[in-house]
Amino acid sequence: MMANPVRPGLHNMQTDSTIPSRRSFLRKGSIAGAGASAFTIIKPELVRGAGNEKLKAGVVGCGGRGTQAVVDLLTGSQNVDVVAMADAFEDKLEGSLRRLRAHKESGRWGDRLKVDPEHRFVGFDAFKKLINSGVDIVMLATPPGYRPEHFEAAVNAKKHVFCEKPFGTDPVGVRRFMNAAKKSEELKLTVVTGAQRRFARDYQETVEKINSGAIGDIVATYAYWVGTPVVQQKAGRNPKWGDMEWQHRNWYSYVWICGDQIVEQHLHNIDVCNWIMGTHPVKVVATGGAIWRPKTEIYGNIYDHISADFEYPNGVRMSSYCRQFPKDQNSGIYTNVSELIVGTKGRSNAHDLGTGSGQDVRTSFKDPRENPYVREHTAMVASIRGDGPYINHAMAVAESTMTCIMGRESAYSGLEITWEMIMNSKQDLQPKQFGYDLKMDVPPLPVPGEYKFV
Image 1 (cartoon, one colour):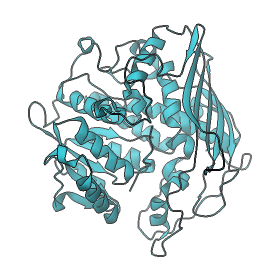
Image 2: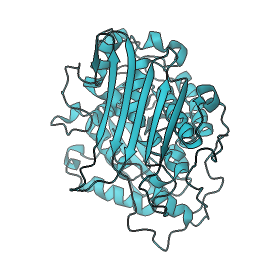
Image 3: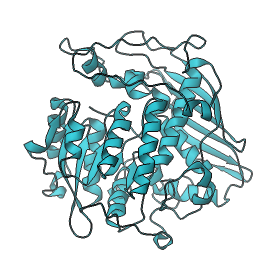
């Protein structure tokens, strides 16, 4: 199973994961990579790779995102080998392995990519086999519908985790993830997320300065992902694919497995605002729809635009807008992926006050050590080995995931949705059976007033 290769975030690294009641205090700590003496360095007792022994990692989900995560991990640290891979589809796994072996950087990895045939696991239960294969780090890069189950299994097995965002597609799943997140904190497991703005040096330094009063008191926040569509199977369905296989291979078009754009993609921008505010919104009113997406199975049942007005506990609002309209050389369609933080003494785009690379998270970096996609893996390995600050972002990004779902459900239903409502929602989108040929009906496109929030 593959995850979206586009994923544009580091909450202040602290020895305890953030929860709403403590955020206002915890967010004042030092940023990652600076002032390490301010942290208690945790050497997890549960890791076999501590000290000079190399860590062993395995990746679950061998699409574009999982493949690139392996590249970033091997680039970011010499102290880890990749020894196992798992996917629902054998062609995805073998194709990923071929690309990794042929990668231009592979000569620098030496023999640290060592996935023998006995450690290539295929099927819907492949994640269980990988988790139990002797790895220290489990890298979760499947479509997000599977994230809660896979993360829970990794934590129960006392594994450190690199976890792609988002952390689920429905409230039941995200609450399951949150319960596992609490356990990961208790076990002092390292959990690094794919919200890599949190690992971009300029974002880290800017957020620190904002929280220290550089732009005064925050009065408004804005989050934008105005982009283009993600359509994975433009040619349509292979006649050999059953419903479930088709929806996996075209997963971005189906709510149950992707969560819609606001959850799968726009989370990056919303997470930055939550990171800066130190908590999650308490309510939202949103609207959206599908203006251009054809009503065919290629395009599934997600919206192509959602606009949301969130409110934080202190009354500050976040204006959120995401859109995916098609663009060609002649269309001139407007695009904008950014954040804006407005204070009483100025404003910031959340990365303009830093002294790092001066580049945003979507720019190629001449020095790979400055690339936030690489930095997140470097920081993860350092956290596990005790060479750097302890990191666990599981709860913080889980709250951002739930924030996004709250916005989606408001747009779908036409209701004002509160945090209490979404945290008590019974919505569970996950299938109860799995099989390549399994029949799966597609719910209709949500219509406000007809769609029922549960």
